[in-house]
Length: 316
Image 1 (spheres, one colour):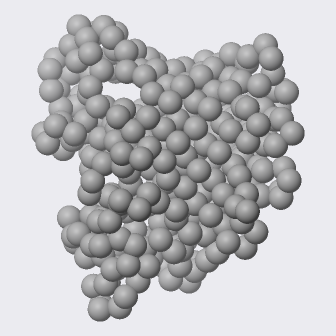
Image 2: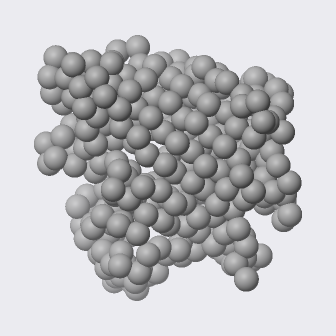
């Protein structure tokens, strides 16, 4: 079932079945603002205390606006210049372009899907997300259309901030054994580029810590790290040990090979959330990713497509 609604003062689309209820904001980057698992009533997405949301203008600083829910980040995470070709040096805004654009959307006739697209005002591409709801699964098919005769390079990640508590743990493939920090404000992992074993490592003050665990909000810490090897398993997830609710991501590992983790445990604006960030490139900055040949490449006048699924489950 789908229906038009209002959410925190903005036009919204609600998509739901007997398992899940999803709320989208087409005028706010088609943000997934709420994801509720009906049998336990859990809201998986981080929610800010704001009663009203204001859509950002193009090029806004991400930190100046509401950061709840799931925003699409493309074609870079960090602000940077586009790295090459005739579009070289065109500035890409903080967290990319499309989170701060209104999207066109079409509801599927069966009531269980929404297709939405955004088009850059400065770069030659369309970004399309076709989403369907099937049981406990949110299935998304993404297409980037390059509208130019030059290759298009990009980083995409689902900036999906998840509500958390000290009962929340990361669930990762066993082969992911090392991480590298890219967060300058960390008090735990050391300067940008510092490498650590995962999940157990030693902090800069000599304490042994488990990076798969979530610390309390009183920790006032902030972490962002990448696993240093590609995630060839094509999945990652979290588990809430208080009631065994799980959220698992499954995706095309060849198209989305890198994996980052964001944790703010009171250290950024006082927020308390975590994010699993499968990425098409490293290390948050498209200009850097181009230099080290770790950006995704859409061919001239071609397409780059991938699948990404979120599964809300229950550990037995």
